Length: 215
Image (cartoon, rainbow, N blue to C red; front, side, top):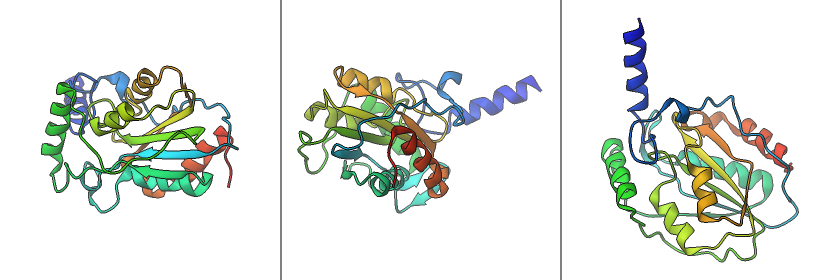
């Protein structure tokens, strides 16, 4: 029985682009149950808010080939509830890729510290609060989001990380945002399983209400 349970766990942690920051298989610490939502503190909700996110459509673990990425659905919920503006980080580098090759490429990008380019730009200076969202690839945000971090100064703002995942929870995303912006107020983190987002608006509303937002 012990051997069977261990084998099943190994299969679970090797299926998604999760894992530790170094690209190894996910540890038990990274498999954070969704029931343990991060304790949130009210934030300044009367200022101007922005949602910056990367979302991968196409072949995704657990939900198959999807036209709208999991993270975009969460970003749209946030925009509807808070009235925040959106800036989607768009790159066509991963278009049409099957899940396994995409995971392999994401791992290589992270190991090499690559910063893929993305389309467009935005002036972040007018925003008080910035939601930052993306899937968890090998323990943190996709590398293209680190390209955004390198180009945009969000220090002295409130930053609220959120993720979609299939077992990694928040991974190292919040910690990496804090490293990128040591003088920002990083708070109110939130994560949701990708296969739950299409029926997950109520959870998003509850999370945002805990931050001080309401429709």
